[in-house]
Length: 309
Image (tube, rainbow, N blue to C red):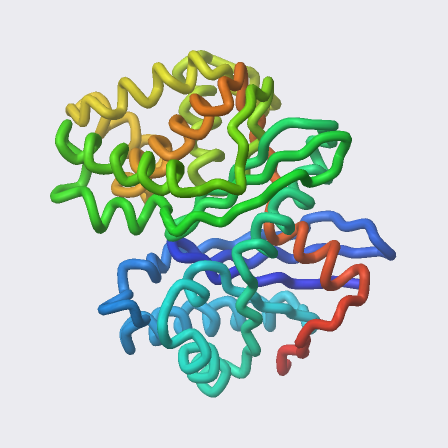
């Protein structure tokens, strides 16, 4: 069976099509749209333009699904719709305009799904897990393949950019403002004990960009999926200079993320520092794969529908 999963995130909207058999899956196709929905939040609510942007993205995905003859589709939203005051109204408006029912998952669910998805590939026995999105960051600690603690923080690469950065790349003052925001959120959070962990497992756009940057800068093998903490720190230090070399480096490798990559990396850097981790492992799988396994393949109660051909 072919199954599509659409993830409405705060920074990007993503469509992934899988071939599934029993509880196993294989990725067949991916498509991404940089919607930047966190940028449409006004006075705590998603604006009409933001709702329209989300609808436009879903309608484009529907065209793709029709062309591929994919009928089975599930749609969920993370902080993009969760962290706004008009969540229900926005979801209902999206359904009326597109026909897609959107499940808004909680921060705890997002953390769990991301962790479960990553472990499908990494299969670590213990450590910490991080998923940095546009408007939230999920952190999980685990031991013997069991989750010990999880939290979803209301900071992400896009909302930090909007709050702390005046131009495209943050100035030294902008970097300091971002770091202060990150520190404030982490100091308030008591659920996570930042004990030393050898490995921090990561998913999401920021993590993938870090790996791409490291492969370029340090000539790592294409199949490599890990970056040392020292390599990561050097990359952050280089990009935070915000000079032409940093700008060119980002534009060559991750142009869509030029405004959000430094805020996202500063979140990850502080988390890695607090766990005193030696290395970062980046998984290709994340919240979509965890959602697929837990809520689709295991037949949990979830709104589903078929696209019209």
